[in-house]
Length: 122
Length: 96
Length: 112
Image 1 (cartoon, rainbow over the protein chains, first blue to last red):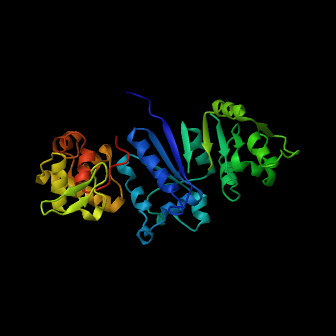
Image 2 (image 1 turned 60 degrees about the vertical axis):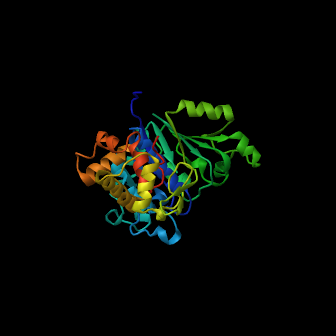
């Protein structure tokens, strides 16, 4: 079954361990990746906390979400973006993140959304 | 090319502001569920003219609210209108 | 599904798809037995895939489906082995499902 790949943009806006949302979004991303779609993953608002280094979720019996993010290239998810403003507001910087991400301003995010066939935010 | 931004919660600090920051002219907002409180508490009326705001009538009335009189670019829709909105935009984005 | 019965009569609980319920229950002996249950005869070629999978799971917490598995094996063991045909020969049918089962990992969730 041949289909034209769609551009799917996933917006991660939730903290990593406060709810199941971050994990649910990651599962959506990995599942979509299996279907050969063009995938953008954008971390926005509190979602940037998912990128913090040195997470030790074992302390609360949770799975390490940032470690899973490190495996995204294996799943051909190579377009990883982060909202620069959200980083700045939380005292995070690009060079202290657990994974490499492209910084975005509002206009860049607007364009990402406008170029997408589907957008999911969680 | 336009996006329908659906807001279903009162997200004072983040939800609406994140949505507004990345909207483009021609996009629309739809307030549903607890998102309808935003039209009572947030400066929906201060939205730029290029942004149309729709409020789901059922959710609004269920909560004892009404549209602010001053809000020119804000209108009520019913469930059929909801579907029409989704169909008339290229994509929907829920800021849940 | 019920338990995996080991030669020394110990029982290891499995989920309904035949995957280990507790990852800590894994041992080479358990792996042999799991391989048996899916008609795979373990050789050194099988073991190196299983080791790659276990290491990956420890790092990432993920059970890879077919495509990421191929890329992972290519990265860890070289392009010659990082091909679906090679993995299909070792784990006939569905390499991602079989290899992760033998490695004691959870069932890959995004693998159909």
